[in-house]
Length: 353
Image (cartoon, rainbow, N blue to C red; front, side, top):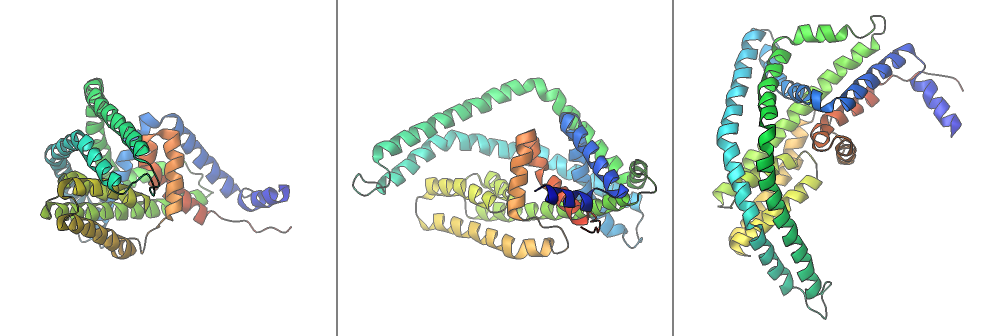
């Protein structure tokens, strides 16, 4: 065991370039861990700026358009879309979420009736009494959840000021990250030792890989969100906007996300139509979207980007979610891409045993 660690150390941490890069990574990690709430707006702005930089780069790659002009057009288009989402779509989704939570007891009761039909004391895996106890516990949880939502809405009045600050600061940060990207990159690179160019190469590689992944994942979310919402709306499913949005963000966690979002779709569809043809149309449409996403959209989008293994994504979400809670879940994917890229580009020193 000792020999293994010695060989790993000799291979990865004996060169001054490697040590410098390791110290930089460790310092940034410690600052982020300790000051997460402070740097959260910065991290959110960086992720969104990476997303918008792809659009800017597409128009300025051949230098046929002035970068500053394109940045302004892209930025103000992003602000307009954000305002539309904030004042048009968000209130509708909140309304549908409220109605969905209020209807959960009825949905659970219908689900209980469905399971009771397949349960009998002589051949059932679970008895009727056990089923009743399970759904009683679920009803209690739903009641508590509804109360928590109301309580949070009332208690969150004190955090409105902080939310407003976030809403104001993040767009400003995004603007400067886009408009002054060259100057910011130059300033940031001053922290790297001039003679140790490995850190600068690592920074350039991370900038490329993380940017590509974030942009591709965002496009995938939009495609699945829009496709699911349109299909659910056309087929007349209740809470179509809310469920379509959940389908979109479910792609962040491959496989697990798709399974998790299918559960409310089944319950809502069954509660609305029973086992009629409309119910099966919804299930079929949802499956088609998932199949197209996994077999067409993902291969096309991520052909030139780092596509993480689902197991790596799950471990990252569990790890960073445990450390930082909901913000850890939000930043888990970019951080996982960062770690994966570092492991890929980290130089190995040849040594003789």
